Length: 150
Length: 150
Image (cartoon, rainbow over all chains, first blue to last red; front, side, top):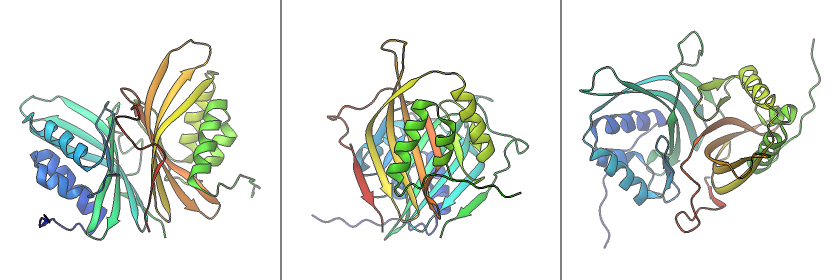
């Protein structure tokens, strides 16, 4: 039986990325899944984890993460962008703080890939891994750098 | 003073990927750098390391790695491909064996991005991170899967 699905249209990879981190921060599974492409080719790599492939497996992985009920705060640094007509790849440092647990922070490096679909830009790849630390502006001058390929 | 640079043209991302792993295996810096785009936007993340951005920094990082003189053997598994007209993203499990050190193996997950340039397909992103293990064909059926976006 067909179902009616109403999802937000993200008109740029940037909008999709913002929704991704907002949903991650809020533990909002439906918004999180509105960011991902409805496609069994999508995949997600949580830090230190295996590659989780396919829509249903990706959904399950976020559901499991969000049931921990930890409120995470994200500070994003040093975004780096490759923009093509159909694919976009963003690299970003995530400085994650677990709210209520004092000043403990984890640095994560994420490569996020977005694809242009008939229903806007959607995430197709999230590859996150532990990073030693976020670069200072003095060591890497790539904040909000953008490269357009055409 | 202009210099003459003669480099191999890789006509597909797949050819560039093969040259990348061949150069990695052989510790061949010049071939390794022939795979990378001549661009300061490129970046490389070695497992557990920071994001290394820019052509000269990327070259230095490989030079440092290759001076260890370790001979590495790569077995690649479960390649997953997103192919666009100007960008391609490959995910692959690398099963690395250090030759001469017995059966010790490391599992790495890599996200490799390639860009189409005037001089063929070149690597623009290599994001590698430790993985728990490579999936068996029974758990993830994505070997040599390809998705073409157009």
